[in-house]
Image (cartoon, rainbow, N blue to C red):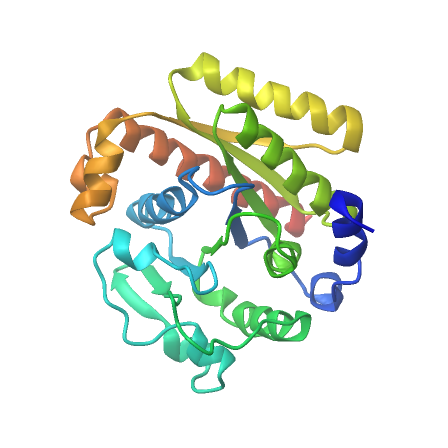
Length: 279
């Protein structure tokens, strides 16, 4: 069995016990994309900074396994990384690095030799430990690897909500659809949010999202939510080169405002979730 059908069949075997038995309060958001180059990590890091500037306590976990680079965007050389947890060298709380008030990171690895392979059981154990830290934070972000590897889909399955980053390019939209199809195939029932990045204007973002929405509603019978969009701008590459979050590098830029809007929308979703839980 080959192709996407074979991938769905394989992913249906993933361990789902943590997802189905955990008492989720909706705090864990996984950033993902169908292909590289969409700006996923940039948006995860900068949205985390935006939320922290709004007074929310945020933890960002760089779970792009062995190709992590969130630390580069904030000019940090980590002395402890996620591999310490999977190698049983440290407990998860000991890997947390506070960057500034309200914002902490668990950094990942990049190009490490002999990195232990992930399994469904090890990922489930990671999420068990992560959920034990939920009470400390308003938001927990996980930056996953791009694509649809078994490990990435397992991580997405355990998250409360997924944030899918795409661009207007037809190939990017098709890859985003593939991720949503696989999520549907493995039974993910959490909220599926979409950010359209690298757009020329709002109209381009709206068209991109509506095309994706029409496809998933027609073929998959599922709902996706539009979280917002971010425009093309030289300010993005400048902040990356400076290894400084854009909200610090260009706080008055149009892009900074758009990222703050993303953070505000996420805060609204969390408030709705809290109200629903109280009822």
